[in-house]
View (cartoon, rainbow, N blue to C red):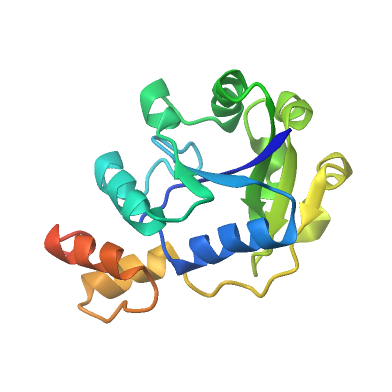
Length: 195
């Protein structure tokens, strides 16, 4: 049975940290393929200034093009409305009925799972592959979620999308933080500028 790792995120923009996490999942687990799913309308970031889905989708595809085990899926955009993980997994389970589905999340998200929509149903639908985030208080994580989790031992990723956006807005260098094609796309489309 094929094992799929679902890596959802705002990807505003996608960066080398995201790609490193996905590569590590492939290397350290028996996941066969990582599916990147950009959030259409994330419920946990309702007031943030998120650029259009189209731009985030285009950058994601530029970043993963040519990788044999990375694919993208725009299911949350097609579903419309608020992007609830449980709703997304319902649809993915229909599409990939013969596959095992794992959710790739940060330790901060794991600690907050009890606040997500339908956490009990979510718990019955998937297992979690968890990467470390520096500001997580593990004591807040409920045991029922810990029991369904595999923890990746990887260095903390120090790249953040918010830092990249800030650097672009202030005319600072972002080389090495994002793939070159993504950097070019940001420049050509004048994304994240203050004016």
